[in-house]
Image 1 (cartoon, protein in one colour):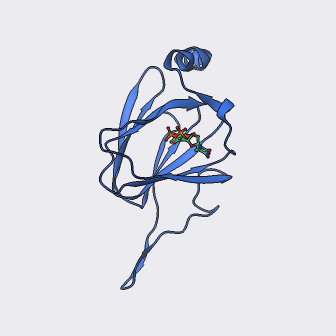
Image 2 (cartoon, protein in one colour; image 1 turned 180 degrees about the vertical axis):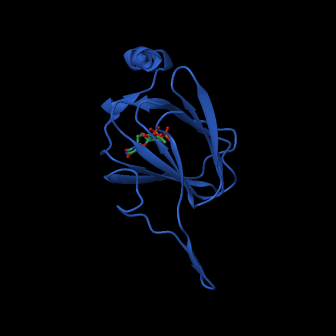
Length: 139
Ligand code: T46
């Protein structure tokens, strides 16, 4: 799907364990905010929205979960099951996170501050809002 990136971060490991640094050399966005989701039940679906401007990098730092991405025409599901995998999700994609493993922690790095007005939480509104973008893509 266009502009979605599945990144693999270099791991610094030794006999003490592993470490992954995230900074401006490997982040695909300018970080303004970090949040993380945990205690999600296996049958729960989170997300279910798109954004108007907020790009994000999603990393399942513990456990695993799946992320469904939808551009209004195509859908794609990505498994995040390792802390060295980062999924870059541009603002205009509908996203749903599900299939959380026991103890999963999903971290998001975002390039905007939190603003509820940036969310499109209704699927039909999402299709309408980005309709012009899809028409241009088809041309
Ligand atoms: C996204 C996916 C991947 C805040 O007060 N500040 C924040 O920075 C965030 C992210 C949320 N909240 C509040 C708003 C809600 O009352 O926390 C509550 C749960 O947020 P929400 O229902 O939006 O959570 P998710 O898991 O459905 O979505 C989140 C992000 O909100 C969203 O930007 O793309 O993770």
